[in-house]
Image (cartoon, rainbow, N blue to C red):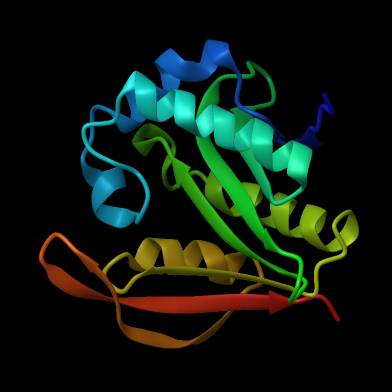
Amino acid sequence: METLELKSERLILSPPQQGDIATIISILGKDKVYFENTLNIPFPYTAKNAEFWLQLSAQGLIEKTQYIFAIRLINTRELIGGIDLGIDRNANKAELGYWLSRENWNKGYATEAVKLIINFGFTQLRLRRIYASHFDFNMASGKVLEKSGMQKEGVLRSHTFKEGKYQDHIIYAIINE
């Protein structure tokens, strides 16, 4: 199977591995913030959820429909988060998503990882558009996207229904011109 690794000054993005499961669970399983700020991370987060994420990663890489990476510190290879591009080949675009361990917030890692995956999407996958959205209350995520070169396009009102209420999303995008 193809091995894919992206590197920046402080980070390596590489497919998550079986040996990462305990770390993934320790990050996502202990803090409800990941569930509250995303659409697809359940709480509690279990080994079964982590196994499913690894399967999605492997299948997406083979089919070239989704590129899921563990975010790792370059010096220690410690897993500190996850990031992905979900590919829509018909429209030559991808949706970006990411999460980062709470102890690594506000250190610039999220922005560095987002810039790295945008570059990968444009240079290696030759995508035209990469977009992302966040819940309207998660303004920190919006700052990451803006610092990464994405532009705010608007608000998707009542875009999702979660935990008994409708949720607005703010959408950002960057175009490969």
